[in-house]
Image (cartoon, rainbow, N blue to C red; front, side, top):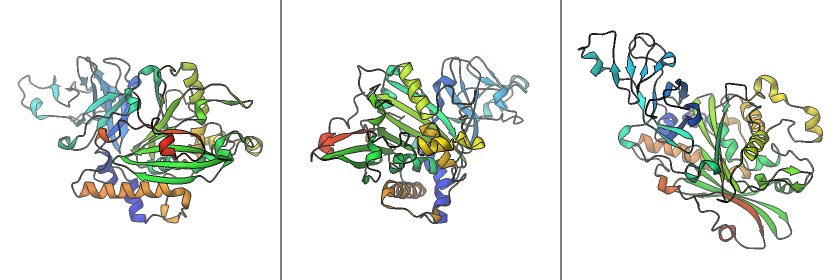
Length: 428
C-alpha cells in the first residue's frame, strides 16, 4: 500500500505540484507530427500537465507551443490565423511567433512600446520519431532532446499512435509495468497452451536499477529445460519498452502467420490529473523487414486502436467506459478472459474501472508487484530530488539511447544476460 500523502504527491501534475515539477524536467510528447501536417495548417488544442496550450506549425515548419489564450483580452487562440510565421488572434489581430514574441499589434499605434513588452507563454519543442516533444521546465536546466532507438529508426521501420485514457497516468503506467496481468487480462486464447504466458501464469520478477530508471525481467517456465524470459525497460518518467516475441505473429489455427521482429512500448503522458494520452510505438528490429501498412493495421486493430476503433476526429476508443467497453459475456465464458476486444481496450477497462484516481492505501501488493513498488519509490525520490534542487534520473539521453528490450525462449541453463547480450543493444 501507499500512504495517502505519497499517493497525492505522485498523482497531481499541475504547476507547482511535486510530480508536476518532476514531469516538467523531462521532454514530454505533445502530439503526433501528423496532427500538424503542413506549414501554416490549422492550430491544435493541447492540454498537457493541467495547462491549456495551442500548437501550430509556422510558415518555416517550426512548431510553436503557446498559451491557449491571447494576453490581450484572453481570447482563444484556437480560432487564430496561422500565417506568415505567426499565430494571429482573431479578436484584435495580435500576432505571436513560436517563441511567444508579439510581432504585430495592428489595433495599436505603430510606435507603441507595448508590443516589445508583451510576450505569451511558450515552450521549446523538437520533433523526433514522428512525435512533437516539449520541455516545460526551467530553461537553464533543459536536457538534451529525446534520443531513443525508436525515434532514430526510419519511418519504414517505425510507427507511433496515441489513444486517450480516462484516468490518472499512474494507474496507466503501473498497468504497463505489471507483467503478470498479461496471463489474465490479455488471455485472448483460452486453453491455447502455445501462448507462452498461458503456460506459466506466475512469472518470477527481477528488477535491476539503472541510470535511467530500471530494467525488469519476467521469467516463465514453459517446458522441460525451457523458460520464456522477457526483458523490459522503464525509462523515467513514464516510458516502458518491451520485447514483442509473442506479437511477432498472429495466433490463427495454431500457425505462425506473420513474423515481424520488433519492439514495442508506451509513454503515458498526463493531460491532467484524471486523463492521460498513451503514445504507442512500434519499432522494427531487422533492417531487412519493414513494418508494412498491412501489418501495422493488423497490429493496431489487435490492440483495439485500429482505424475503425476510434471515434472519428478523436483519440477516444469507441469501446469506452460509457458503454462498458462493449464487453461480451458469452465471449468471456468461452473464448477470452475478459470478453473485451482489443489488448489496450482491456487495459483501459481495468485501469479506468479503478476510478479517475486510485486510493493506493487500500491495496495489498504481492511478489508479482516488485516493479510497481520500485517505480513508486523511484518517482517519490525523484520528486524530492527536484525539491532539493538536484537532477532527477534519466535526463541524459546517453543513459538510455542504446538500450533495447528483448524476449525469447531460452533452452538450457544459459543465463539470460548471456543469451540476450547482443539483442539488448540498440541497432538503429
